[in-house]
Amino acid sequence: MQELSQYNFKIEYRPGREGAKPQALTRREGDLHTAGDKRLTRNVGILLPKERYWDIPETEEIKLDVLETTEFQDKDEGEIQQASNLDNEIQDIKRNLDKGRKEMKGIALGLCQWKDGLFLYPGKIWIPKNEGIGTTFIAKHHEPPQAGHGGTSKTTELISRRYYWPKIREDIERFIKNCDTCQRTKVVRHAPYGLLQ
Image (cartoon, rainbow, N blue to C red; front, top):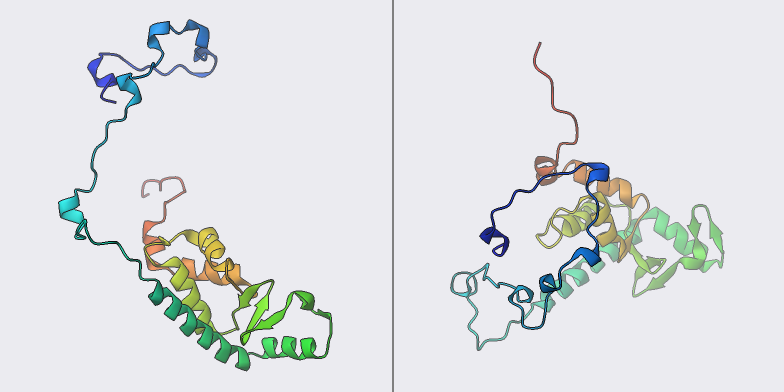
């Protein structure tokens, strides 16, 4: 942009056929970039000054707090195990697996397995039918700054990496429709309202 600001020019829009593509043969040799050309180097600017936004001394290493995440996952898995023991659907699946059955209505028992007290369905932890646990998982994957209130598709994708439950997308849609932040920042996609009559 700095390079262009030195020139006085006018940009005009040419609709459709009038806006023909420039051809490489019409370029002058002097317009091509060469080694050492100033146009090849980027102008670098500091967006966040170090003194104002970074309190970490240069000698100190940045350490990520991994333990906190692990503790949350262990706590969540404990809650899931307790709720799984009370969930009728999961207990029915467990009984059918113990009997050696291969099929059950709506569930491929060949994809089911138990590991460390958790029920896995296609390799993902099955969350029992418990409104509190489901809502907590959706909130943990939708509301943090890293997730950024990503919407139905993004939140479903984040949760589906590790967890599963029947009608997961419907639950996420319902949660996001009730998310205050999402509703306030949602882009309006309808025509402007008319005048009052």
